[in-house]
Length: 462
Ligand code: GBH
Image 1 (cartoon, rainbow, N blue to C red):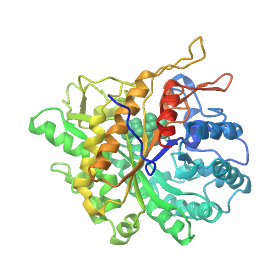
Image 2 (image 1 turned 90 degrees about the horizontal axis):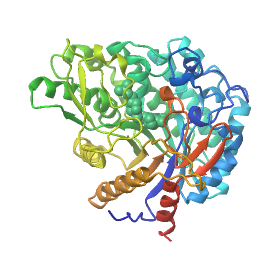
Image 3 (image 1 turned 180 degrees about the vertical axis):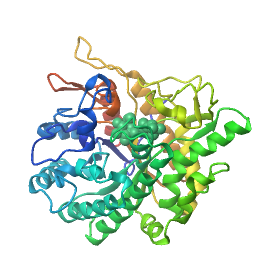
């Protein structure tokens, strides 16, 4: 397959998140987040790994931004650690926390890189979690206030604002299954965490607009196209329910201003969402300048046999899925990543088609705010890091993105997850997603072959 030509007006960026790279968890007046707590509990994170040091990016950000510049990327998507700005999630801003992100943004601008700031990438202040976390409506209000602090300080320089990264993952993994912080296994009782994050998103949009920020404002949802495991009606039903939970529950309120209707016999589980006040829905569907899509893999879903639950997911850490009515089937005949996730550029095409079909002219311009893959990359004796599978992944997914754009979707960019190998949540440091290899004991960075390949694509734009 030929290398895709990336047009000049298509934003090619790289993405990271605060807890996954920064380290320095006790510096600069930073408070404790749910991920610090979670990592301290035995058995939560593979190998007992934590983000306490991670890539030490808090101290090495100048060097890391040099890498973004050397790559030739247009934009750098980073996230702001809420507990650096408000240690307990309330009250006035911590000056040291604001100063760090101020320096970070200026360091991007000095290198000609557009700053794309995510306000929340999962690191809720522990004090807010102790008061109910995202199960509490107050957290949404606090999030709006936090957004206002950032809008006031960085609003003149940030190019794009992303309110919340993947409210789906926080709801499902954080509150329903417990695979992620804060580690609750509430199953369907986790759904209020979704509503409060969406409300927090809308309040943040309004706070940023009120602050008069110069940049564009959006949200990032993770999308997985769902295919039924078979034609059996029960598998079709399970697939429809999973599509609702994984996709539409987080898309419809933002883009259409209403929650989706669940298929029978699951309507009852979602009944409360049919009765959400209109004012909440108006806040949640506040107009956006762009819509962010994270795409990793499609899902093949059937109805779990209650007597023989296999507990299989692409991620493999969804151990308590047995209590949910899903069984995940293998997608056959495609390569797999280090996580075992299927590599499916066709799934990206399906996701983008589905977005156009479902939301039509309600859909703002789209950015793919994450895409990427983990592989067990190693530094070779000659100092190179061969990662041909990641080159293939990026070539194929970029080709799909550019094809959908040529076919008429207003798709404006693609952000590679990730700039650096980093702390991969419950999988600790076992999964390497970077364009740049990180040797954690020495913190030395080595650009992988995929980095050099992408740099070549960006150079040929002229
Ligand atoms: C992204 O999640 C994250 O934004 C990023 O921080 C992360 O490093 C990257 O992917 C790689 O994992 O309990 O069913 O919700 C996107 C992929 C989708 C994987 C949701 C975990 C949770 C399983 N995630 N999934 S579920």
